[in-house]
Image 1 (cartoon, helix red, strand yellow):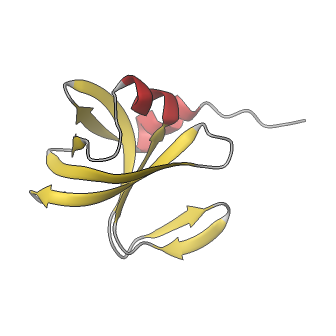
Image 2 (cartoon, helix red, strand yellow):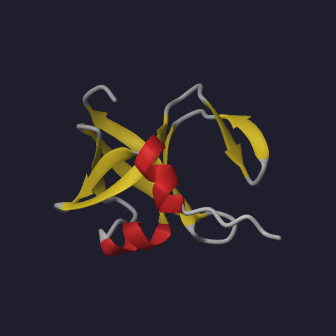
Length: 100
């Protein structure tokens, strides 16, 4: 029997508020030096990344060079990459100002 998770519940508990062009979504911000998991493999992050629901990113119009605010800090999206089954995507970010 497959275990069905609801990703929105997960984000509600662990995510941070994000805004792009006035549209809100929730994401998980990873900062340089934090341990994260990519395709089941633990890795140490070397930059800012944000994981969010792919459908919410599309609804907010997030794309390369978009400016997004995460918990009050401004970032620019360098790249968006769908993860595994495509439910989540990872955004590679450049911090533009403010402390996360």
